[in-house]
Amino acid sequence: AAGVIQSPRHLIKEKRETATLKCYPIPRHDTVYWYQQGPGQDPQFLISFYEKMQSDKGSIPDRFSAQQFSDYHSELNMSSLELGDSALYFCASSLWGGEQFFGPGTRLTVL
Amino acid sequence: KQEVTQIPAALSVPEGENLVLNCSFTDSAIYNLQWFRQDPGKGLTSLLLIQSSQREQTSGRLNASLDKSSGRSTLYIAASQPGDSATYLCAVRVGSSNTGKLIFGQGTTLQVKP
Image (cartoon, rainbow over all chains, first blue to last red; front, top):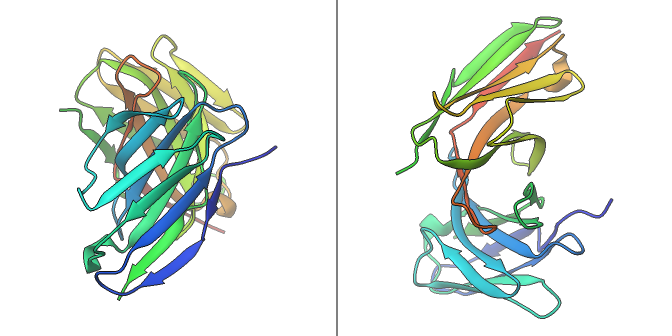
């Protein structure tokens, strides 16, 4: 069965650079979520989209923005990167009211 | 504010033992609860989903229970195997809409020794 696809899987950036993470949800899933997991931490919710509209917002810095496109894929844009942004970034997708399925994550390292 | 706690933080058992992982949450107004498995540096694999109206779910050697009124869930693993070694996370979905975010516990790291 198709799973959530994230790209790239690994990303290395310098401080103050910009990064774009991509997420391709499971076909026919209408909701996408972004989570951030710092080293040794539990995943923290960043933002979600339902039918291409932002639906909920968590602890997402103002330097970050995200959107969901007409084909339902989503992108997380991160600007002015800081050392503390180094983390695993997960995308998850679901049907309405359903189980959230997570992608393999993008490991971002900021040097 | 919803808080999720998992006890113990780490657990080491010999192969073949049955074990229970605990999860508690402070606000009983949840939509559902999911248990996940995470291998080091890897993604989250969904193990079981329990809707707020359900009491338990089973999948193979795994059984998850939910007592919403007391804010508790348990994950029972029968006949543990070395391949079960991983971190197990529980997460509650808050809100009544389809856009509810998950609030995670800090996980229980399980080691099953051969």
